[in-house]
Image (cartoon, rainbow, N blue to C red; front, top):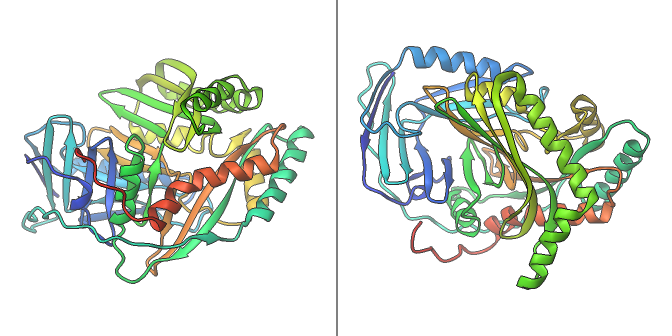
Amino acid sequence: MRVVTTRAAHGRLIAYADAGSPLAFVRSGDGLVGVGEALRITVSGATRIADAAAAWEALVADADVQDEVGAHGSGLVAFGTFAFADDSAAESVLIVPRVVQGRRGDDAWTTRIAVDDEPLPEPTPRREVDDVRVTLTPGAIGPDRYAAIVAEAVEAIRAGELEKVVLARDLVGELPAGADLRSALLGLRRRYPDAITYAVDGLLGASPEMLVAARDGRCFTRVLAGTAARGATPELDGEAAEALAERAKDLGEHRLAAESAMESLRPISRDLAASGPYPLRLPNLWHLATDITGTLEGTVLDALAALHPTAAVAGTPRADALARIAALEGIDRGRYAGPVGWLDAAGGGEWAIALRGAQVSADGAIRAFAGAGIVADSVPADELAETAIKLRPIVDAFGDPLPPRPVLE
């Protein structure tokens, strides 16, 4: 494999992506967009992340890389997405694009990738984005059923069978043939500029949660657990944040998630430090957040294997929570709440949790998920309302016209 990275002019990243199968990981204007597919690694089962890491290591060892930029994300990279559950029917993949457009701060670049004796591909031009409208409706787990399984989970938690479980519900829809998926990505990017806009193999969304970022031996993880709606006025909004930061139910839920992340990282990290919890403001809600940093003794995929699934998307104890999710939800989550992101040849990269998004199948079927953390004090109606807030980004992305383009995009 031959990889050549050269400097390029700045441009709107998402406009470079393929309309039908975009590859993207963009936040606040910086990030990566891939076009085409030079190579795909497909894995599954309980060892899917370790198997992907081994295949990637072999690929990197055989690659000829010329990188004149030397930025985080230049050179050889792959986009990836992993299924939530070990027994999921959904494939977990690493995709090496034929062309990557990247931007980070003042650096912008183009990476071209050729396999065997192929010529290097030409960079793709930016293309106008066609607006797409789709209505999403309740899927296998409708509102009534969701409230019922939350009530069952609360009973189990109060009986001491587990401490927390994250239960999700779904919405479904159908895309018209030839739909431009970049429309949904741009809608998410413009409404939620501080979130991570992602797209890999039909999975797309805008995640607020960086599962792990690794660079030059350092790692960063953000834990989100505990949620409140935004207030209608600045005064009410401030009160909502203060109440969230003091509410025992949310603080307890968050503590379980943060402690779980720290315990998962300890075997592969040094100098771990946590700051939080603090209220993190998003356009449509507040989260309690804790940021964790440390020195990583391994690669970003080693960190993924240690962290996934976090207590923030599964529960605690982990095995008990996963069993309860399978029993109560009764459906395959696919890649929802699994890792989605990119990795480089040095073992670094950025991976989010696949939240606030949807999976688009080859036949145009859409399935979106959102979940809530259930603890002993949870009220089914409140958890249902929380999932409605969390589904709003993807519902708006597919259902509403594109918002105006910002001056800097």
